[in-house]
Length: 83
Image 1 (tube, rainbow, N blue to C red):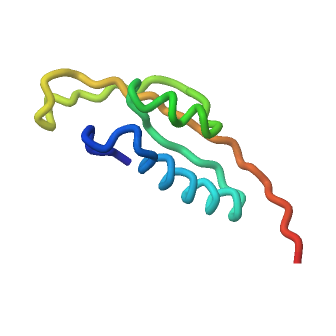
Image 2 (spheres, rainbow, N blue to C red):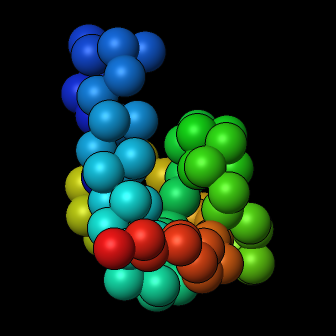
Image 3 (cartoon, rainbow, N blue to C red):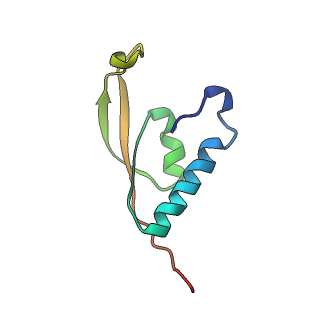
């Protein structure tokens, strides 16, 4: 997920993340993502934990530098289903 910097801080990423995590919780599945250091705080707010760093050479894709991503996992959250 990425947000155009012009729209940062308006809740767009949080809205999409919240919806996706609700689906993961409903299905009882583990959630995985790769985050940049800039996005890491948002994901930690939603329960993701840093597992390890993943080297990524952004120069292959037109970036000016190597980018380092953080592999993050959010444990399964069980929800009580009442019928």
